Length: 462
Ligand code: UD1
Ligand code: CA
Image 1 (spheres, rainbow, N blue to C red):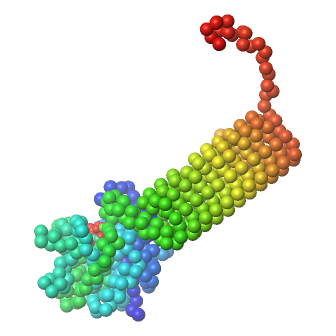
Image 2 (image 1 turned 90 degrees about the vertical axis):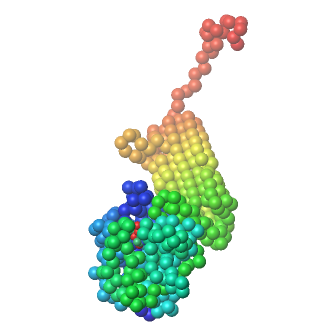
Image 3 (image 1 turned 45 degrees about the horizontal axis):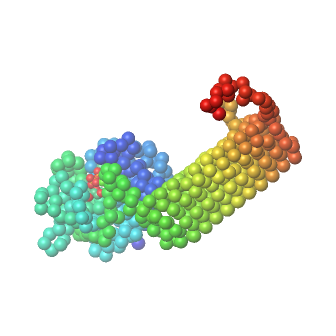
């Protein structure tokens, strides 16, 4: 098989995005657009990949790292000029070159494979990936002659009224005979409406030199969607989301209302888990089997083992073991590790803390920087006081302890196994095993206090 190379165009600023962030770094379902493109290009199994960077070069390179080589385009003089910047790396090579834009995140490796196969079957020097668009606005149009043979690509801004009416569009993806491509690129001029060196002009140039130009029309236009503004970004996200959700459903995950369920591309969910609507699952979250994720939950880089029950809660960079549950309205923050069968109820916040199996933290509690053992009962509104305004301190609570409601545990602190804290205590000293700590003012009853109130003698006031 002849060698296959790929060029990814990613040097443009993306003015139409009206953003500080470079266009190809905008995310679709949790991954930058250019990363989506590279991932699919990689899956097509190529010998060499070169990404053209310019605007945001450093950011793009640090994101993609060694997965790609880079060529730098100092000034964005057009897509043709951009590809020419790879000449040093690819110019003299023999084989086929795939060109893809960094702003078409929905294209798949399968489509690239089909394009390569079609290109070879046709013995072409250039093959354009095209699609039929309901609304071709903004895309280059594929101009064919009476016999249906491709003549050229005309950009929207250079198109006559007749040409603009054509609905077959250039997806911005091509397969070229590599050396033919670079020869043609040297002949491209910037004599057009935008004063740019268009890559699309090589088609006419290759034809004029007698090379066969083919066009492979893909069946699904939406896959070729190019993202130039935020309207298209939302559209791409919607399509990608549908793909992701359908894959999960086919894998045995119940999505009760897929239209309102937002799952990033790198999320993993095992079979027989149920996800209600209005749920957002981001980053590299992993969810086991037989879990339940209730409406209005947000999971970010979370890890849930099997049979975990979440009710409208936020879980970020935290882990929940088998059979644990949380919510409604609780928040697990980074490094919260919730043990097996642990119950975290409502309005709780847990951060940088390990909670042992079967421990219960039912209501209105903050646990920060702590290690809790097994079978502990934490009452209502307990505060692990971990911060003195400068430093953070740790609290350890032993197995089978009982922390009464409305207690403050002022760290650093160690409560041994089977310790008992009376409700309303502010604990500042360690508690030994089997001891009860009580730290609150004793109750005083002021008898006949009522009689001292002036109003008490008023017949109308009781
Ligand atoms: C381009 C095609 C158009 C096609 C459309 C498909 C040309 C002239 N037009 O138009 O026929 O229908 O894609 O989506 O090629 N870039 C650079 N350097 C530059 C200019 C652009 O790297 O100097 C990069 C951009 O970052 C982007 C890609 O090339 O990733 C395409 O550029 P863009 O300006 O979006 O081209 P379109 O107007 O969409
Ligand atoms: Ca574009």
